[in-house]
Image (tube, rainbow, N blue to C red; front, top):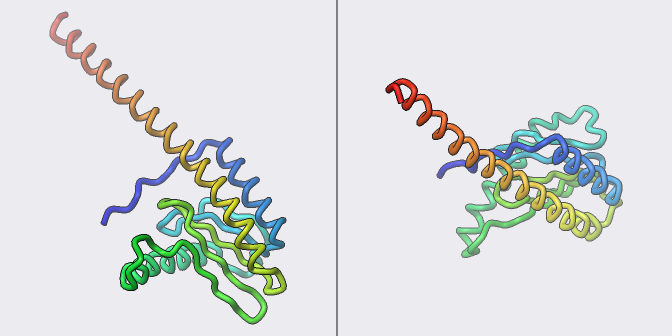
Length: 164
């Protein structure tokens, strides 16, 4: 299975992502919020991670979501499970996929109601999907422009080299 092609975000889109994560952190009183690509590469983070290695956490989260895809298949689900909750004694970790390309990790205190985390995460995921869709469209448009420009440049050079 091929991995999805990575997204390239503009500065404006990264700022929008930052606002989304900041809002989610504020609304859920989360310790930290991470956005990573589906391979676990950290895209953006908000909050106080302290001694937490967020790069490792995002990689482990990606592995967890990948494992749930197979679990879903084994129990007869058509699509993968879209979220995971790991409850600890004092803190919990809520993992949610953001389409097929990214994942969202929220670390929060157990005093925060899980329903509130789910509600605000769902809203944030939809916003992040829109940003990713916009980035994908811009990337496809740029690729199309490059193909046309490159093709025209090549034709012009061939004409020039052949004396035309």
